[in-house]
Amino acid sequence: MKGKFLFIAGTATGFVLGSKAGRQAYDRLSAKAHQLWGDPATQKVISQAETIARDAASVAQTKVSDLLDRTEASVKKEETKTTPKEDDGNHVI
Image 1 (cartoon, rainbow, N blue to C red):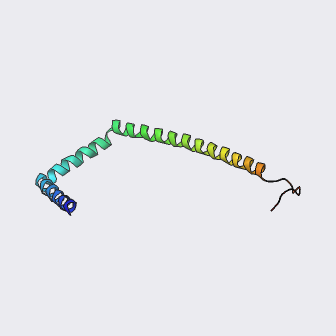
Image 2 (tube, helix red, strand yellow):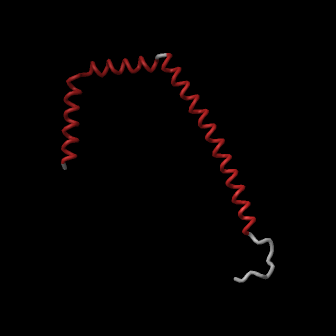
Image 3 (tube, helix red, strand yellow):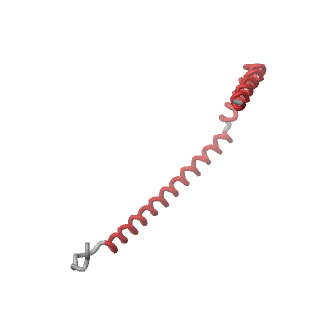
């Protein structure tokens, strides 16, 4: 109950303080964010990050594929070890 009360009190306080700042403060912040997003330096960094992420994903995909291939080969090898080639009559069921 105490947690709910604190949550409601915090929400009410944020609403009152936010509404006192008004729409102008929000509009200034929004305009600054749009200006920053449109900046060529920001777009360059974003492009570099995308390239790095794409390369990392490609490397990870290759490693996972190789690991799956080795695991499959290992399982097949173990299956051939444990599967009798022919019934020699010495097995008791």
